Image (cartoon, rainbow, N blue to C red; front, side, top):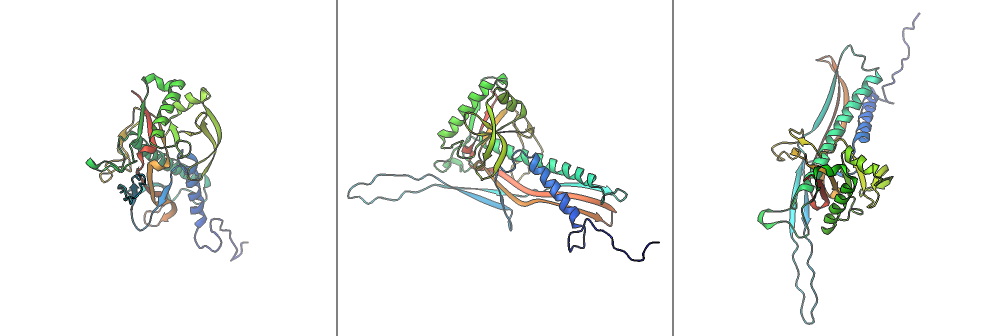
Length: 332
């Protein structure tokens, strides 16, 4: 015979909690873990956290002018040139899964895990596409992002670098790819960008990556990014010491229209025709990235609709910054 009163277990409640808060913690952890694991560029770009506003600015200072001292002559001062760009974060991204009342949601770890994996995967794909889109646009830009009409850009600020392959078939030729990378890095160095010390990464799709790998042009090692993040088992270009990132989410070879992050205010910044782009090299300095809301998740039951909801959302934005820190290899 059952007791009138007995103790029950509440495995989804944290210590001192009156709600099933561990459900949310587990779900959030799985979404975040999946995003970190499946995003090729996570940790390579510094997303500045902003609050109290949706807009951040970046100021550019042109290079200084030097002169020589002359006996009996007081040296005059020189003027630096200035420029400014801004980034507005105005489009939160959202993923939701809905379960009916009869679904065994609260005790079904597998269902929760499957939804978390799917939401994390989709959010990672969108983030990678956004990063590579802006990085490629910076490389394709022929002038500085700080250029101001007829006045140009502050001295020392340049556009991106572009190298064209000799033929469409050259993207399958490891020697041609390697030569194009050397030409690209040469252009960047002529703009005072050091690919090895400025945190430049080389990114491409799987086909080009394995073309280089089969020709033994890549080595596997641990790499420390310009932001101080240590990346394990990273592929690095043998001769130049620059990390190589392969991603199916790399925007090269694609035409993007109707991106969730594109709107009239940002000039549809995340759309574009990148069908001729084969590879891109960029440093975090090529991008201005900001995050208004980091990844958040929630699991809750709605009494009105009598459904369970599993939500994940975040709000971030990017724009090109120092274009000279980016470059692209393109088809002719």
